[in-house]
Length: 443
Figure 1 (cartoon, rainbow, N blue to C red):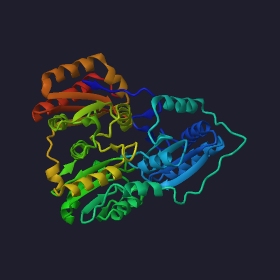
Figure 2 (cartoon, rainbow, N blue to C red):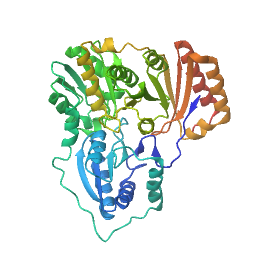
Figure 3 (tube, one colour):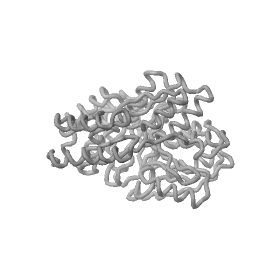
Figure 4 (tube, rainbow, N blue to C red):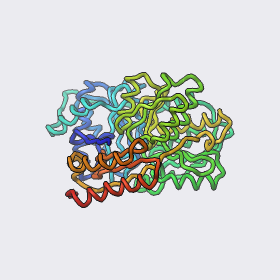
């Protein structure tokens, strides 16, 4: 039984996140920027955001914090998260910040921080930022930083995508989730030669992730069939995730994308140590099928920052999450939905086979449920709960497993039961949910 709990006050699985005006305020954003400005020591901080209504206010506040501490700011506006990471790593910036709540509803927002290498900051760096927030005092320098001109700042990201390969002759549906991908993904894929059908391209920040994007791939599947496309790709609000659809309108999740890419890279002798990195959530069926191809799967805690850390430590090239965070280190050091989607499309084109044929891996039934509770960490550590979960997992034997973890972004406790037998997976997930609801204090 895998169990995850978060250790920091403000940072969750993927940065700082909360409802704007409640958990996440302009004042907090200013303190974060101030901390980064101090660390930059006159260096550059790149700031980007998705199109949520609250994003502009948070960006201004964060920028003011940086400038007050003598840091310089490059505000690239509404861009995907991986673009901020890539620009940060390729401009000599001290840090990068993306203001986004990713897949969460419009009323949420968040702050993701990248180091100078384009990777998300580590736990020690998070602690430094949290300490500055806790002190709640702005540091002012005698020398105020400058806002640098933004023209051409994102060109390096498009140039990187252009090096992936050509997609001439392919018809691809792109669901941009009414988010940050709207102004980027269609342009990038057309530049690669694809015929693009773009949906979910509203600039209205109140519609981000609303019934579309990576959390609602069924919409993409319908559009692929309607358009008669070769495949489809849907992103989340900040485009660091991608979920695909094959030409038959079937969902291809992050685990399956990893499978297709790993096999292609191994055939090209471009998969170091014949190993990929997944997470505790990676499907056991995909793991078994990778093994049959001579490819090992190494698991990490959930969160693409954990995936990239393991990849770097072991010198590996490919990793990701079932949710669609895919990291291809040949090109970038963070989860990038647009990059991973373009690479997947290239492998489909190069193979001469449809995606449905390339995606021949097995998925064990995974039952996911959640409980809304403010006591998520306490319940996840409760000895009686852990004992019940372990007993239930023992029932599944070698054919299944269970994961109980607090959400890193919401007041929810997540339960996942996986087993070759669909009935047993459902029985296990429901049993644990009922046990917690009847034995634990949720509020």
